[in-house]
Every structure is written in C-alpha cells, then in structure tokens.
Length: 316
Image (cartoon, rainbow, N blue to C red; front, side, top):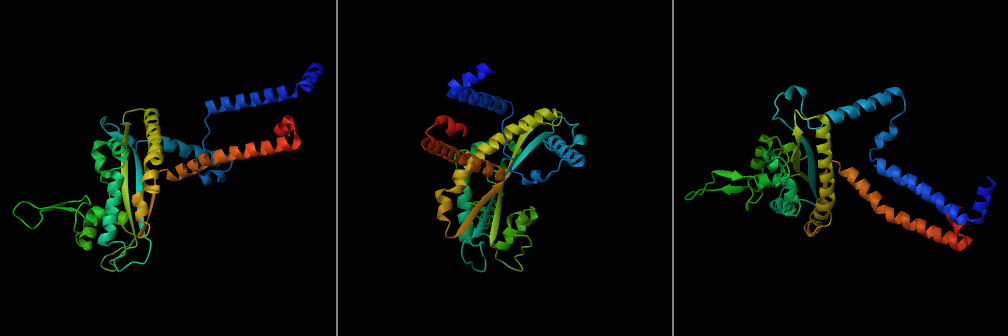
C-alpha cells in the first residue's frame, strides 16, 4: 500500500491516465457486447417492476416476436405461404391558405400532388427500394395509393373512338374526372377513408382541406415453415434497410427538396411512416453528440486555464 501511495504521489498524471484507460476499456467492451439503443417509447418508463407488469412485458415481447411475418399457425401447412414484413409511408397534404369550395380537391392542387409523388418515385433509391419488395405488391409502392391517381387517370381510348373504354389509375392524366366519380371508385376499392378525412361525403360538402397518400412496401422474410428465428433475422435486415431508406432517400426528397419548397405557398407537405418517430429521435440525438463533445472540450479548456492543472481539470 505504501509503494502504491508513493507511486501515485510521484506520478499522478500516469495514474489518472491508467484509470481513464481502464474505464474506456470497460465501456468499449460493454458497447461491443451490448450496443446501446435509444429508447423512444416513453410508455416504457411507466412500466413498474412488479411481477405482473414484468410478465405482461415478457408476453408482449414474445407475441411481437412470434408475429414476425404475419403467418398464422393454421396456415403454415402450405410451405409456399410467404411471410412478410410491411412498411408504410404516408404523405399528407393540407392547404396553406384560404381555400375555395373544393378545398384541396382542385385540379391545380391534385396536379401538384401528382407531380410531387412522381418526382418522389423517380428519386434515386426509391425505385430500387421498391423493386426489393414482393413482385406481387410492387404496385403498392410504385405508383402507390393516391387520390390524385383516381382524379387524374390516364384515359385509354381506342383508335376511331372518342369515348374512353377504360382508365389507368396513374395520376398522369391531363383532365380530371368528375370528383364524385373519383370518390366512388376509391370507395369501391375501400380507399376513400385512407385518402380523405373521416366522414367525407361529396354529396354533403364537395371540398376537403387535407389529403393523404400511402406507399406500402411488403418484403418477403421467409415462408410459413421457416423457423421464427430466421424470420426475425430477415425482418431485422428489412428494418435496417428501412431506416437507411428513411435517412438517405425520404428525408432529402421530402424534407427540403425544390419540389416541396415550391409548394409551400399553396400547401403543406408532411410525411410519416413505420418507425419514423424513432428514427427522428435517434437522428436528433446523434446530431447533438458533436455539440455535447464541444461543450465538454470547452469546459475542460476553461478548467485547465482556471486551475492550471491537468489533473484537477480532468478529475476535479
């Protein structure tokens, strides 16, 4: 003990360095073994430590794990039944200023929405990401589900006729169809409540102030006979790709693109989707890390100038 005391008294900086090195080593091993995860669900802070609450949390976690792929056990007899991981992207539109009797359902607004969504689909990375989904469900993400596709369809006219025999719901048409026609077709497809506000009825009030579009991505994560562990692992890969898609494609395209900026005087554009709130919190925390490091460095420099001792500045 006497030797240790004399060593630390004669070499304080070395002792401090050894101590900090051991702390950093333990922290590094801990992060490598159990990477940190930012908890964004504030409901978890309300969970008590009583036995019933712990059992319920364990049951919910097990249920979520078993439900990966959304395949019922009774349906698992068919080995060809695919299990899916579904990710949704919602884009909402609301008028920025005063509106007429048709609100956002004017030909101008619907044309702007159609151009914006077409620009998004042409964004590098969007088509590639959509192509990774199950081929059977490609249409859910490209062109997606939008009321502008119903209001501005491409009219298919055979040669020699002037009356269209069919229409393609792609939002690429020039002349809008009657609003009631678009609404009835969307209602027949069970999409009217998705696009329009709850309780909207063109017979009562023709206009609407908000609209919503949906782009759904369905990824195959295995089959019904695959092990749950394998489906969970594949689902985690999809989650990683989804987060990268949000960060690298959606935020630049919908956050500050020229197309969205050009609409700011006419309408507001917002977007949400599966897990986006978690991603936003994580991005905010990561962006604040350089500020925290800068603050620590400034305080250390101030303490060093004030105490003129590195030892006191670090550990004091």
